[in-house]
Amino acid sequence: MKRLLMLTLLLPVFASASEPRLPTSPYSEADMLPVRTVSLSPGAVASRRLATPNMPALFLIGDDPLSQAWLKRRLPVLQQLKAVGLVVQVSSLADLERLRALAPGVALYPASAGDLAQRLNLSHYPVLITATAIEQ
Figure (cartoon, helix red, strand yellow):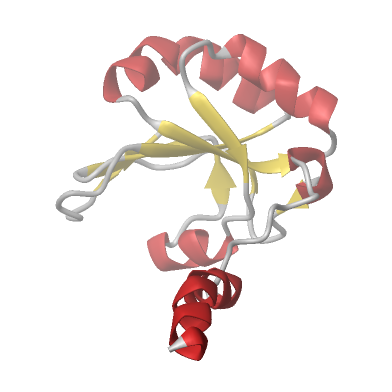
């Protein structure tokens, strides 16, 4: 009986020790930088129709002058669509923060987008991608 009581008391301790736990990451966003998407470069993008139902709006930019001007010009539309930005070319956290300062209320994340570019047949950015179109 004593053994059963001891086992009952210790069971929660053993159970919690064996539960998988997500490790806390010691990495920061700065550790993901620089980001280079070799298959993409700044340039003109021809608008075209797209049929991807339920796809949320997203856009691809870099930290280059063309992307910065595009971001300022398209900001109201990006905010309205609640579009998420992937910064596909950025060297430093300071450069990423400068882009974020140009786009209040818009989420910008450093990310390579080579696979996405290949799937959508893109070679240039900045570009807005919605469920119905690809446009600059």
